[in-house]
Image (cartoon, rainbow, N blue to C red; front, top):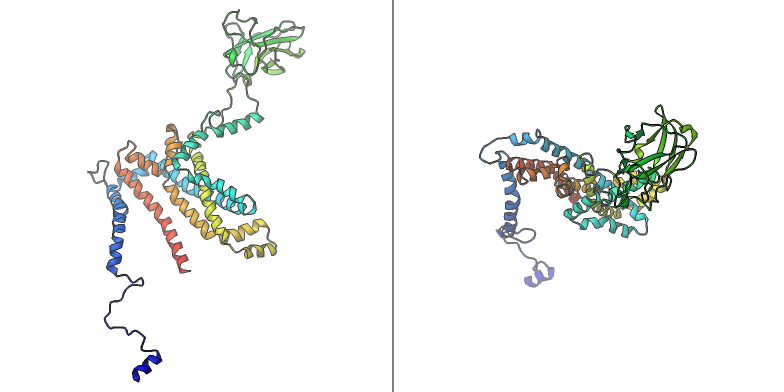
Length: 451
């Protein structure tokens, strides 16, 4: 009866803990089993991470050959040698500018794409460069920044805008025929005659330096100016096949249309004219007795755009290519964070009278602060390792001006320098610079886990 009573009470089915039984972990796995499964990962971590770090620290204390102990001399060289000091400065510029710029653009794109119908397509276009490798992106932007406007997209745009507002010279390589012309160089690319203009005596202005088949448009044959006024002709004193007399308008020689001609007295311009389709021009009576001048604007070299990859702009230009690649990454992460924002808070701010800028600045941005910090810190770590873009985009003459620590590490160790001591020291410095950012990320993850 006692047995049946115990079963009826429900206590007979409860397990009785045995004294001295070995307790297992939460997952029911013994410690030695966990260590056994973790051992391959620990071996890989030690051989690929821990050992290289330790060896780099040790190697950074020795000379280039690795036989002589030099202490901290390699670290001192980094901040005293011009090339490595430039790399340090450029790395600081990258860390200060690129992550902030990418994060701001990503935030703007993420907010704006929520307000348009084609937001998904826009996100796809912005994120697409992330599918391209650094090598391919470097080759693309090396072509984009090409100096020749006929090859470089950037300079093609710049020169098109420039030429829309500034008249370019028609004959940049033309010059007076020194054998027969009295036009002499007078500074600023201009040419001034030694003689003076006389009414009824046409001025002949022969030019050379241009191939007849390279003249723009369809030039007409040159004609001798006629009339009682102050006239003249500007023409190309050369024709295909040669022949003819220098300084005289021969049949088949082409007129130079659009050349500006000035009449100068005592260094001041008193009249001006432009040659017509047949090369002739007519000056007013005020030009009588004046010298004739062809301004330098007739012969100025064409505008070829901006030297994007020169010493001055090479770093900003490469940062621009980096922004093009990574703006999509920032946009996607920030858009994911924005999707989790409580819309009631935004509507409440609008009801309280806040305009869209105030809602964005005082509500949206503070709510997205954790995501923005993640993006910013991730990009800071990323730009510390930037190497491919600079190595490919920067031409050899400007590579020293665009140098960064990661590239200098390669050049010091493997790019012909052969100084593994300095290269290891640069690697250790990069590790020390990344550690604070890693700490920020770990601290943030710990706080999120506590929530």
